[in-house]
Image (tube, rainbow, N blue to C red; front, side, top):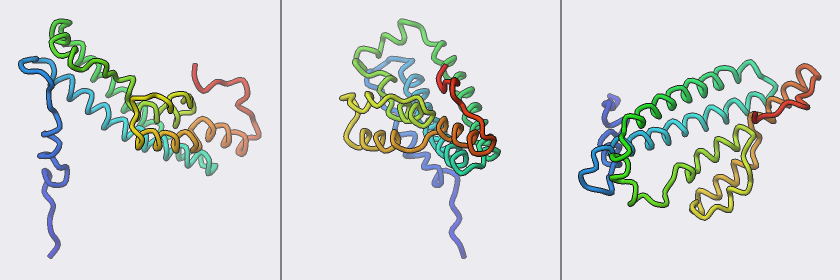
Length: 173
């Protein structure tokens, strides 16, 4: 008889709920801030997977298969925008109640966000020298920066399926 996995065990809910650890006491908005940013990072993981899949099929001359992956990226990004609206519910005072212990931490330091830039075709190798990435993050980013990305896949697919060129079109507007 096969073991059946329950919801909490499969999703590791107990582990997940232990990851929200405020740095301050009594800052009511800090939990919201942590959950929003942790969920961003989880959704970034999905975006990275979808961009990698889209790039692969574009480079394999199967552009029609990229549509579903890229549509999912757009939908996740829409969801992330709604997360930002949640942060708008914090008052400036509520944010300042826990901001000082976070200094100099910033979303700018998200290595997954940088991976999304690379996978999209707009990443800059200079970010690999940022000192806030640890060695493992930096090595992963370097690897991602050297893999084919969505933009080069688009160019490749356009050139091989139609003979057209993407010259003059910029991947970043």
